Length: 507
Image 1: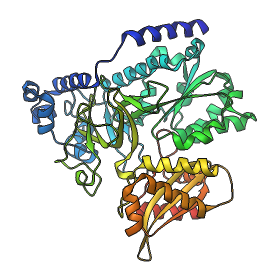
Image 2: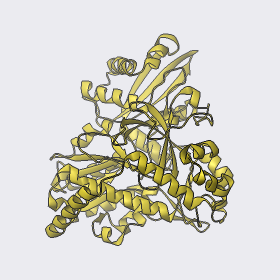
Image 3: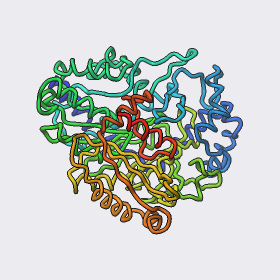
Image 4: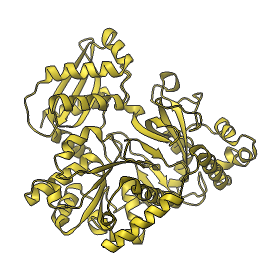
């Protein structure tokens, strides 16, 4: 295995040197031309005149002028429902085999097409991530170690001849043969549908594996690591996996989880952020001196950026048709944008629901700042999840809190509006909510002018309640949202929040 690792490291070093990316904008223009050319004879391509767009002198602008913006409901109602009925050549050439079920929270589930071309781009993006490891100064023997991929079940559900599952499960079910040698927990355990049962199987087998890296949503990864430590009666996960060096995170910001994660490790770890959405593998961290991820601009996804401003959004959190969408060439650093994608799965100018901030335009690096529907602005708070995460990290540092999950809602109480927060902690402690509330309120005012104005005019109070983090997980289990890519909603509407409160008061 040491020899294999040395060979892989040499290949990565060589390929990393010779495979220099074109400029993000040049790569993006070529991606869009390829998408339009491939899909020009589909029903969608004929409806929106792809052949004429390709012949235009300014293809990108013509594409943006002719093709409307879509969210899932609009694209499904007008086009994707035909795929579920067995039709072919709708928004992408050929038929359909896989649908990715979006993780969501308690909302309606979505079934997003995953084409063979999309699976190919996900594999290529994975290779890009592997090649970028040359920047992280890892030893040769690391590349011969096992890789723990904690995704959703690879046992996909047959729905009228189509296979459905979360994107992590679909991807793992289609791993290349050469990679299966390193892949853990292995195909048999990964096919286990029940989350608790899968955790127990992994826990019982953990000692047999030599894990060098791990990938997964932080909340579920932490639960697994703690269970392995508890089951084996050891102090840290490095007592079981001494060669574990890399944790690849994704789905949510890692900052609020770092403190509790590091208590599980006895050795320094390399953390790498990735951005695998149901719509594709969109970005990966390529260098160690940043927490930003580089958009994968040359791999079947065309990106557009709509400034995340009230005038660009409707009352359902959708981008308005008149809102100007910018390319990576025109977008600016340190501005919050709603992300639109056009992909080799037949998504066109599609709002995936995430907001991003470009941190380095030349490198096309971004951070995920939140969700359009998880933006708190009921009475003018104007708070993004990114700002909330920063405030939570301040609480962790100042009070030594182990905050692993949180959620907030704007609630009306006796003709007054309050922001009510629930903080999920891993260890019992004195409440101290009053001082914590003051610090949280002050941190949010420092990060958002809108929140500051709201606190003076429309937002009457802030309340914080500290609860065991297990309450969040029991609520997720109640909604069949354990494991995989399921995430705790950072912002809830009033009805969902009241249901959440009612549920946890019974625990």
